[in-house]
Amino acid sequence: MEFDLYIKQGRLVRPSGTLRAGILVKDGRVAGLVSGNEKPAALRVIDASGKYILPGLVDVHVHFRTPGLTYKEDFPSGSRAAVYGGVTTVIDMPNVIPPTTGVGALRRKLGEAAAGSWVDFGLMAALTSGNIKALEGLAAAGAAGFKLFLDEVSGFLAPPRGESLKAALKIIAGTGLCCAVHAEEGPLIAARVARLKKEGRLDPPAHRESRPVGVEAEAIRRVADRARETGVRLHICHLSSGPGAEEVQRAKARAADITAETAPHYLLLDSAMMGRSGSLFKVNPPLRAAAHREALWAAISEGVVKIIASDHAPHTPEEKTKDNIWKAASGFCGVETLLPLMLTAVNEGRLSLNQLVALVAENPARRFNFYPRKGVIAKGADADFTIVDLEREKIIRAEELHSRSKVTPFDGYRIKGLPVATILRGRVVMENGILCGEPGGSFIRPVI
Ligand code: DOR
Ligand code: ZN
Ligand code: ZN
Image (cartoon, helix red, strand yellow):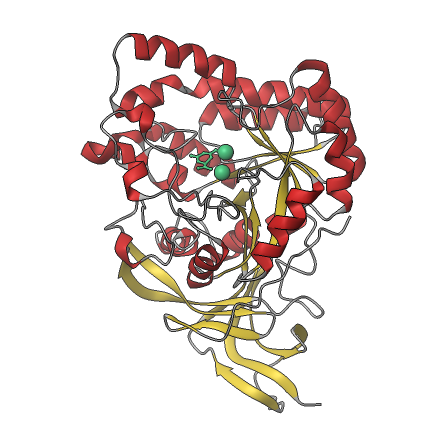
């Protein structure tokens, strides 16, 4: 048999260990692994000597802004940035216009995304106070899960509360999908914002003060209790604090089906680093004091946090740069820098490459029901890889990002470890910093 692709001489990284093996690809899937001595016939051979081969990253938290907010980002630009960052599968969030609250909106978004995506993608639907009747239909239409924004104070995507939240989580439990939660309590935030505004506060620290760690911990505690009562598979997005991690741990000990993700900015940055460009660093939840960073690293090594995702949330420089912190948009780019930043952490000895593969590929694919098609290099899996050079160094420059809105808190950050090639279902889509081929990403349905 002639194979489509043979990647030879690489070091293949799995959570359980690293092995020297060649990878054979046929029809977009891994056809088998071979030892170094064999010489299989293939249309294309890539020599990965000196490099590591990781499964393509599965970033379970991006905002590519399609439809309705495409002046910030869209699927072609966001997914291009993903490919540069070694990410081959994303899960996109539903806070777009129109929001993904019903089957019609999901189908419309799917069509627009599929027309220009460089990566495979799943789509989250929203869980709001108004769409409980639509949840089962959304699951049947292929939603990757449901996103609940507990921090919502404006009314856009307002969450159900009390008994109706419980009823909704019961329905989601029946679908087998995850309910992913932005865990900050809206009413607590609203009261603080009102007080701070009354005091005339417009400075960046005021935003952080409006969302202290207790607001996160309280939200996790409450929603985890509902998860235990309903049996729903709960996923806490962008965990940012030590007390938040303790609540996840507590819920686990009480047998809630709960996982948590954190993001590079919570692991590597802290509030003291915000300096004069404070509004560029505005994100929800906010950056914390340095001690929380260490608590999150500890939560990773203890297995309390099993997923790292980018929360790629681009806004234009104008939207991000405001003298009045309440008027600045929250969030920034992340999908392209996720892997380089974490490889730098590997080089610094904070975690192993094997642990990293679990955190950014295998665990996210498992939790969102894309495994074993995604997240693993094994026979039969999609041939999605990122080839990594752990020695390559670079300085992150905001203006060099491939997103439409080039804002990152990591501008000027020195990294060591870069993806040098990205392969999606057997096709090379990025090689040595050059985009190749065409956007051939597909919608992926979770398999329950
Ligand atoms: O900072 C954030 N930005 N946090 C969120 O939860 C939403 C996101 C966005 O969509 O911009
Ligand atoms: Zn969020
Ligand atoms: Zn988000």
